[in-house]
Amino acid sequence: MSKKTIVVCDHIHQSGLDILANDNDIELINAADEPKDKLITEIIPLADVAITRSSTDVDDAFLANAKKVTAVVRAGVGVDNVDIPGCSKQGIVVMNVPTANTIAAVELTMTHMLSCVRTFPYAHNNLKLDRIWRRQDWYGTELKDKKLGIIGFGNIGSRVGKRAKAFEMEVITYDPYIDSSKATDVDVKYTKNFDDILACDIITIHTPKTEETIGMIGAEEIAKMKDGVILINCARGGLYDEDALVEGLKSGKIAMAGIDVFNKEPATDHPLLDLDNVTVTPHLGANTKESQRNIAVQAAENAIAAVKGIAYPNALNLPIKENELPEYVRPYLELIQKIGHISAQVTKSAIKSIKVTAKGEIAEYVESLGTFATVGVLTESLSDQVNYVNAEFVAKERGIEIIKDTKPNTSGFTNKIEVKLTTQNSTITIGGTVFDGTAQRIVEIDEYILDVEPKGTMVFFRNTDTPGVIGDVGRIMASHNLNISDFRLGRDKKQQALAVVKVDGQVTKAILDELSSLKACISVSHASL
Ligand SMILES: NC(=O)C1=CN([C@@H]2O[C@H](COP(=O)(O)OP(=O)(O)OC[C@H]3O[C@@H](n4cnc5c(N)ncnc54)[C@H](O)[C@@H]3O)[C@@H](O)[C@H]2O)C=CC1
Ligand SMILES: O=C(O)CCC(=O)C(=O)O
Image (cartoon, rainbow, N blue to C red; front, side, top):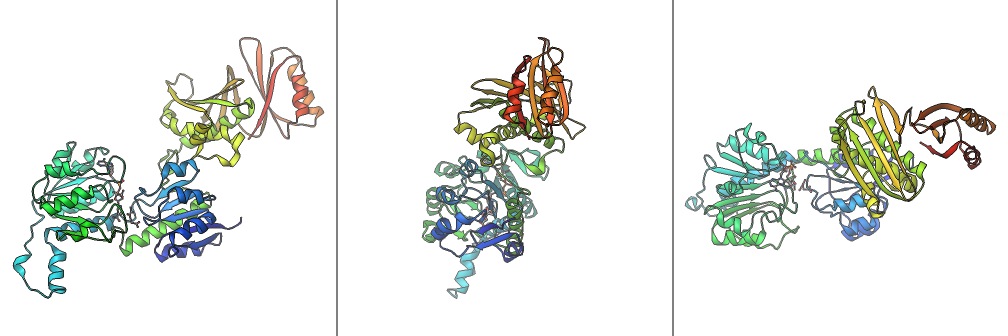
């Protein structure tokens, strides 16, 4: 295998760089100190996989140069600076490292909270820089018995809650996307009413930056808050509207704010920096030795797995979460991709729609089945230009409709999956199932019931059901020195039959012509997997 190139775009811990440098199959380019324009225009075009942090945006310019890139590994949690739909369109898998810096961000949140209630940096500077000993200027408040409102109760928010409970705070959370028991089980109140959060003494936000969360706290929300509220943001700049935040701090409505993140970073000339009631850090949420080591090691290992095509841990734009997939599902996904590929080979005409139907427990995975079927169908015309990430985009661009349907399972099989491919000239429906957890079988082609293992080279011969046809087919194959390895027959009620003939060799045009010249022949086609 020729060496694959992994480009490290931002600074990561040496332990991750060592892993990359010590892999003989990998060419490592550490571009963390390169100017961004050189990184984008000269180095990214060389990358098979890129490792990024918050200092490198995966935007239009990045993607235009990412000609070879198959995966982007975000060495951290937030992917708000990664154009995920843009990556998907280009077939680039986006992966993050979701929990390696959780504790670092949690502890920085607690640091800001404590710094705010005790005006810690101001007292520190007053003594250290000004050499003034004025204890009466630095009265704080206590966390104990204060009400903490946590917006977003995921990895970080929930652990902030746990620590706040240790400080004997009353904790309440707003997170419409979790089961309330996640909060109530750890003695945290759960609310669906955002105003309950606005009524708290201290508010901290731990959501991703999304269209829904940008500006979640603005002037209107601040107006509803208690006078003297304390706001903490160690998630992303812009979740609190920055103008409203500055105004609130200036007016004294907000007593203090602890801010690690800014809308535009680096932020060295931000109005928040001119105020006397903020504690600020330059996006240090993940900056502990432990977290940086963990992130770098995981990012490096995941980048290597991706570049070698072995696995895509924590992929955000794949149709399946590999580590969450029950064992029984994968054979169905493989089978439907094969069925899709066979359907496209047999019909060989401009595709109008791909309809996937799932029956049984497998119906829960109809979305993924749709993607795998689409990959199978499009592979016939696009080969490796199509993958699980871009398949549906590519189909849409070509005007192909993808329909995913579930039906009650009356098939007699534990699960049944079907692909109905409609092209300009014809329609074919192929159904399949998996026996004993591993044996993938086609069990139906249009109205014909069969039992075919989708494998190797297959000839599909449809004929009027008259005596001697099987012999004729065998004779033609033999005359071309083509060995038949399997012969499966399905018959319908209209005196027609469909044979799936597996052969050990190439099916040439001459063979197909001879088969179609048989009097009984209705149609003949072939497919190879
Ligand atoms: N300052 C720093 O250096 C760091 C910042 N972060 C930021 O912190 C964020 C949170 O990280 P994790 O807790 O690990 O993520 P997570 O995915 O475990 O938790 C996020 C939570 O936010 C909730 N959420 C989403 N939309 C919401 C909404 N509209 N209202 C209320 N809740 C909502 C989700 O349901 C989820 O429970 C990340 O997205 C990242 O941007 C993460 C690590 C370090
Ligand atoms: O290392 C970074 O980019 C900061 C960490 C962060 O913001 C994240 O993981 O979301």
